[in-house]
Length: 295
Length: 343
Image 1 (cartoon, each protein chain N blue to C red):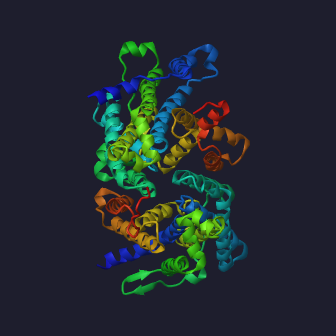
Image 2: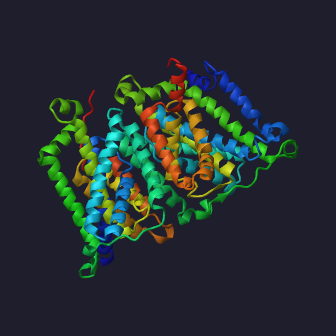
Image 3: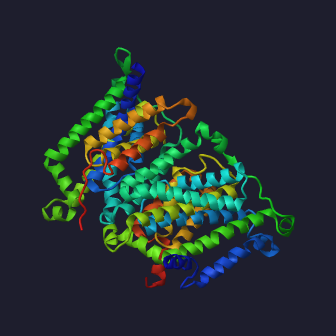
């Protein structure tokens, strides 16, 4: 039983990383309709910027704030330079564009920072003895990641539902034409959506790099599972992304722990099998709403 | 019955045959001679035969990808996994069960087609856009793990992969031409008819139906198109081409392992098809040329630029971005615009 609980707990710990990155994916999909495959690489660029700032100044707060600002700017610029031109082109060209950005960012990372792994964190705040209850333990970093994910989720929910800016963002996604007639600056809204989501992604990158180590492929596995989690949650609401991400983390860990060793390593396979089955039963994800099709 | 006859005729009767296509086909048939003939031997060293065979493999794969993305408007992020299935089925049928190569290839292609049609085409009726993307993605992630599973070891040989044994030729044929050239003609024998059949099918009822589905599924279903049947057909046919391509990949490379083709190859296929041109056979040919020569071009670049290997993915990124933004029709659209050919 303790084994099961400990496995579930560490599943939640790794799942909170998927949840964080999933939040970024959902935010951008929610506010601009783009499925951003470049989310992981964009976050990684920001994390490397944080690494450079940290080695230069030695101050983790400066590095964090700097990386978040950089990420926000990067997201907004990518929108103005690239995605703005394909706003009405439908999902397929936008996916291609996102994959293009993914490859460009990946290449740029190799070019600027190189392929060797870097030491990054954990920040002094997250060092120290793990939190334990009986035999079950969670490191401070894991607790911080989970709390950050929940906090960002709550803030985003509040932002999207109760602030004027958030409502404007939602209106723009719903119908850009009508929103522009209502006086909402549509392009600025999209740029804000991109910047915000890129910053949330960078936060995920910063936390992931402290627990997984920093190199150019740190986030590729995280991105895969974050996508799975976000889609599982329905790509609609921040809560869905977090629930989906945590669920994927737990599923993957339990599948790895309980699949018979005679079969070999099957954690990803079983996790994805479950996700596909869930999607077949509920094609709009767990928290998604079925939309009536316009004719 | 009448419909079946119609479908079979559509495979072979083409309304307009381009002169360029005939000349190209002839050149391909004579190509091995160029590597022997003293005058052209310098221009086409013997290893170009391998390049040409790989071009044939890539062509089948870009056709299969284009069928999904370009003609039917379905996203697939796991096409390389389907190719890997085809390669493994061919390898198992030939090496472990001892079937002759062509029989193994055809069987593997048909089996991959069924797997693709039923396994992906059926869910695709329910899953749309991103959700379908994730499902195909899942396949690509899971397949290497499945191939390394311990109970499957006698068939797949795990991480080591399967090596192919040389082609056994009757003595009369073996004396006529070197083995490498026979391999080339075998690849040509498979790729050329399949490409022609593809071009014709896409001009016939099937192609028109798929394009109708791509433009608007709801309208198409109101016109009496059976969405489920045609999506299954699209995914099945695409998987058939991918499976045959995979079998040839195994044959040409002489080897297949769980990591022979991965996520990056799925993405590279996508890039190639977009750069070449969505929804056209010529576009697939450009895409296949891109896939054949990309690594060569990049390693040539390393001579001038010290870090060019790292820049490979940057260059692809820039190509993909500029293709989507500037030439939504890819190279085919670009050349059409140059010639002002009415569409």
